[in-house]
Each structure stands twice: as C-alpha cells, then as structure tokens.
Length: 200
Image (cartoon, rainbow, N blue to C red; front, side, top):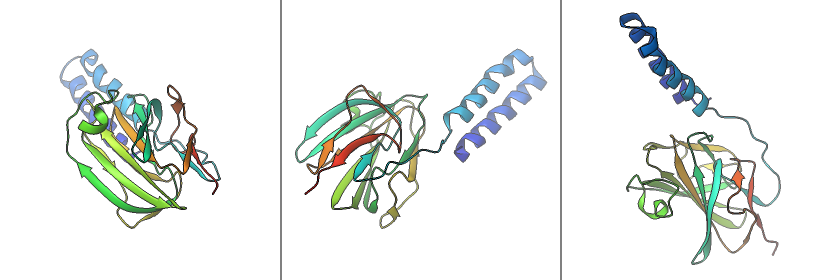
C-alpha cells in the first residue's frame, strides 16, 4: 500500500464521520465509498521480476501504441483508474537524467498526450543500453511522483515512482532491443516483458 492512499482514506473517512454526525448517514456514504476506493487504488502488490536481458513494463496498463521514432521504438501504456499506478524501473542501471516538462492534461489514452501532456522523462543507462521512460499525467492525474534522483542505481523492477489516477507511461527502446509487447496487450508493472535485448 502506498502511504498516500492511507492519508486520503483517513481524510475521507473523517469527513464522512463529520457528515454522519451533522446530517444523515446516507449523505456520508459517498465519502466512505471514496475512502475504500483510495485504499484499492493505491495498492502496491509484490511482483515476480523476470531474469535475463529483458526490459519489463514500468507500469500496469494496456499497450495502446508501438511506434518507431528515429533511432528508438516507443511503447505507450495507458493506465486507467483501476490499474496499479506504482511505476518500476524497466531495466537495471544508473539514472543519468530526470527531466520534468510542463504541459497539458489531455486524456492520456490519446496519442497526442505523449508529446503535449505534463510529463517526467527518466533516462536509465545499464547493461550496454540506454532506456528512457516517461511518466505522463492525464485528465485526472495531475501529480507525478518520482522517488529517485540522478546518479542513483536501480534494480530491474524496482519501485521508482507513482502517477496518481488515470495516466500514461511511454518507454523508448533502441535498436538493440527486440520488441515483445503487442498492441492491445495488458501488461503488469515489473513482471511483463516488453522487449528482449539482442545478443551481439
């Protein structure tokens, strides 16, 4: 459980108790329902991280695009409000850059969200490869959290951040990666394989 979910649930429960005391119980019910939803939304289950030269999904969600861009391939993953929103490192390595970019809050399932929405772009260098991924805010999600900093070493599948509520994550992989993911596939953060590193 992400600690934020506990804070939100406690605040909503307290609000519901006050409404219950001052008014009728039926008016407090929506606040209690929202409190329960926050506990569900901010869940953080353990995941089995696959071994070997593979890149794992940094987010739960549906693969909505696989798009060649210059020297990389972009894999876009859309997270709805029922997906786990904790983000994990796609490969093991060192964080060499973290770039925050202001932007809009368009619906994250739209293609334009990759280039227009508020986002946090992280670059990882490891095992002879450079992998980037973007945490992208959506229509509801307006709070991107990243726990690490430049210079930190991370393990593959390690928790690195969170995007609150519906959002999008893009992963950028170079030609040294063979793409395994398929459009329409639902992937799990840290355990689903997006690509396999080609042997030189």
